Amino acid sequence: MSAAPRTAEGRARDVREILRAARSLAARADRIVPEITKSTGLSPEGVHLALREHLELEATDDDISALVARAGDATRVHVVLSSSVFVGAVRALAIARAAAPHVTLRPSTRDPWFARALVEELGSSAVQVEDVRARDLAAGEIHVYGRDATIAAIRAEARRGVRVVGHGAGMGVAWVAADDDLAEAAEAVARDVVPFDQRGCLSPRLALVEGDDARAVAFAAALDLRLAAWEARVPRGVVGGDEVAERVRWLETMAIAGVVLAGPAHAVAVAAHGSPLTLAPVGRNMHIAPIAMANAAAQLAPLASAIVAVGANDSAVAARIGPPHARVSRLGHMQRPRLDGPVDRRDR
Image 1: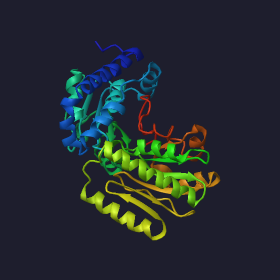
Image 2 (image 1 turned 120 degrees about the vertical axis):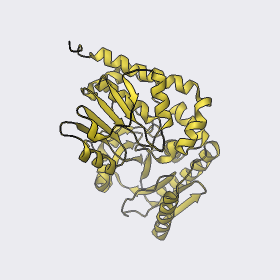
Image 3 (image 1 turned 45 degrees about the horizontal axis):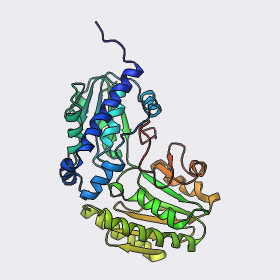
Image 4 (image 1 turned 60 degrees about the vertical axis):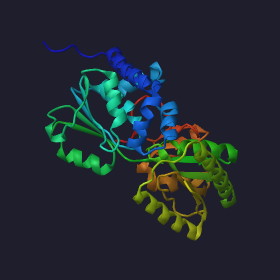
């Protein structure tokens, strides 16, 4: 006899069980922080910040209903996780469990600890850690979180009939409006930059400041101060050699025709009005560009496929300047999206 169809209510209960397990882990933060610090390279303070403010535990009934409705239906989902944002395992498992009665998970080899601990805490035979190869999955779906090259490789390997859903690399854009207080906006943007040392796809790496060059420089100076203050409370974690080299090249380039303000663990660079928009490297670095509202959407267009989130104090403005798929949040809340479906809303 075939199993009874899963109801929306049953799927929502399964999602809530994952949140319960995550809440239980977070309650034992002092015990789990050392292991997560070693696996992620974040500072202990950075791990505490992620568990305290960016672990998605307080989803509303409406959020969970939206997640279930967007999750689709599959016989099985195999989840391949990246190492960028360790708390992302919660959302990834919630989406997979909403879609399928049986879920397997392959954690990142660089950052396996939190995902494994979450599955263990869940204690359900329906969710297991397994190192499954794409070609070995005969049916169902594969949800891949990571670089575009990883998604493409798994898609090429998967059998016919197995759907591969990609959640690729991306970045966020912050909008500082003409009537925003610069000090307040700088604190809000810093609050979005610091979590996960800017490695998440929601992390802003570009800030557009409505106004002239002088206003952009004034915002950069305020952001430089706020990032330095955050470093004292939440130190940046380990930065790889490739990331250091990329930061050096970026700063050298920006210094030629712009203004650079750099501290030991962050950098802010201002491009001249009309300069091409570029992405700052990860590791608490920000490219600041003065801009007019009328030109914002056009100047962002070349980056549209990479933009996952737009932060602005006016949601209507954020929706106007960003691509249709981008998540819209207030400044300071870009790293705290609702648990209503995938963070990445691009069709990958």
